[in-house]
Length: 231
Image 1: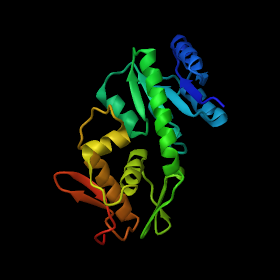
Image 2: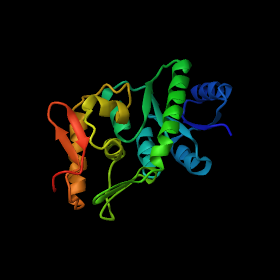
Image 3: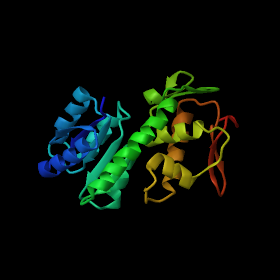
Image 4: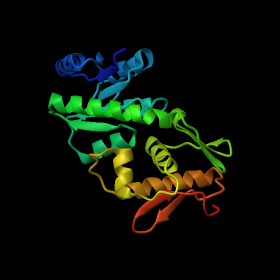
């Protein structure tokens, strides 16, 4: 069965061009012309990847991305005419996997699509695992984390940081490595955004009653996951 790609884009001319190129590459493509129609198509068609415009009628792309990430891990590529860093950062922080600024070459879009499908395939085994530690259970496939069976509500990036670190216990990871794995290889934001997300993540685990400080700071280098000091 061909992989399904949903194009949520109100510029119908551009949407048809994207659809044509995707179809030529062997994908099955479908177009939704506004944010509300896009969310409906996500539920009814269950695409394998989403290409999402930010400036949409009825419901903007950032809100569409936020709602999708409440229940799904479907890869999302944001496309936008807005070049502002804040828009791109907000989209990535809401859980988008990649972005392109209009105008873009179709060859580049197809390359990003292929890269995300490769990443999704390599991540499948990890998503099916349960990461269990004293006092902490993480279910990547379900986007769930629990401290002593008490659910912990995390943003997509906080959860992905937790999974990234917990999948490599004892391994020190630099901020740059975490940015590449969680935000994407072409993220141009401030590396200290990792520190902000780690602080929030630690705080939520502590509020949930975590018995240990699982995420250790390695000064001057980065972070590691380790069941160490008592919280």
